Amino acid sequence: MKPRRSVLSVPGHVEKMHLKAGQSHADVVMLDLEDSVPADQKDAARDQVVRSLEAMDWGGKVVTVRVNGLDTPFAYRDLLAVVESCGDRVDSVVVPKVNAPGDIHFVDRMMDGIEMAKGFSRRVGIEASIETARGMDAVSDIAAASDRLVSLVFGIADYSASIGARLVSISGHGEKEEALYPGHRWHFALSRMIMAAKARGLMAIDAPYGNFTDVEGLERSAVMACAIGCDGKWAIHPGQIEIVNRVFTPSQADIDLAVKVLDAFGDAASRGRGAVAVEGRMVDQATVRLARQVYDHARHLKLL
Ligand code: COA
Ligand code: MG
Image 1 (cartoon, rainbow, N blue to C red):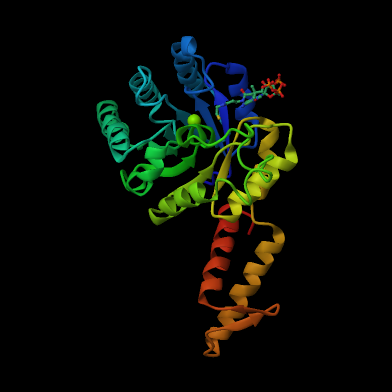
Image 2: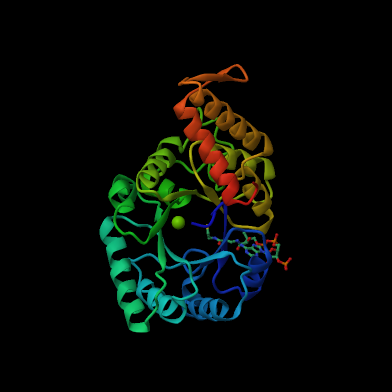
């Protein structure tokens, strides 16, 4: 799977932003038909997204489309139009407010039909947005609902609304929350989703940070998400991409340490040792697995 460190959400009806997104350094461009598009522009946005998918050069990025929620009159048309016209060029469809495995089954079957009808050999992926209490409650079953699934995505604003959490900031985690709650207010929810994703070999993607002028808050938020196992984070503004990419890229120091651990352990194993010391710290098989992940991730990003 290609990296998904930064996922830039782009309103579906604003062509100018599609061009900007195509030229950006985001790993993923997500053309949005849902909440950034007003209700009276849903048809125009769908047409624009199809035109952009057909015409634009995305510079090798992953390109996804967020359809409307399955409980709206728009979603089935979104799926039909996008997958029928562009199923051979869109990487995945992001389904918002997934409440149950049945939501994923519906999208999966519909795509089966469209792909058969069009003779597409490439299968479109699914990314499930977990942003309701019901969806979080069923998150492990959702993660197992289809082999098309690529990632689970945390939707912080809708999740807050769904569970009745107080609105202290519109930015997501990382801004002005310390006064209200000690630690990371979304730690449980995010970790729960990450666990379900990883148990099924899926990526886990964090919600965006809404205050796009607050670079420190964004960095804090991204660092927290990265520290607990997220693979990437949504961005809502091009100015956020560089920070998000950096946070989700292993640093040179991380890579050097990983190489050192792998070398030391290889050497130790050849001498019949199960644990060795590296820089004053114990290294055993579990540490090696962590180091291997950093090493593989760095290779995946062509840093090694
Ligand atoms: N994707 C691509 N380009 C974007 C962009 C995005 N998400 N957000 C802003 N830009 C572009 C603007 O068009 C502008 O381009 P220009 O310099 O060529 O005119 C440039 O980046 C600077 O934008 P700026 O003026 O700082 O922001 P804004 O006031 O125009 O827009 C938002 C601010 C938040 C409304 C806008 O960033 C946005 O719509 N973000 C996406 C919202 C979204 O997708 N929400 C749903 C997912 S949670
Ligand atoms: Mg949402």
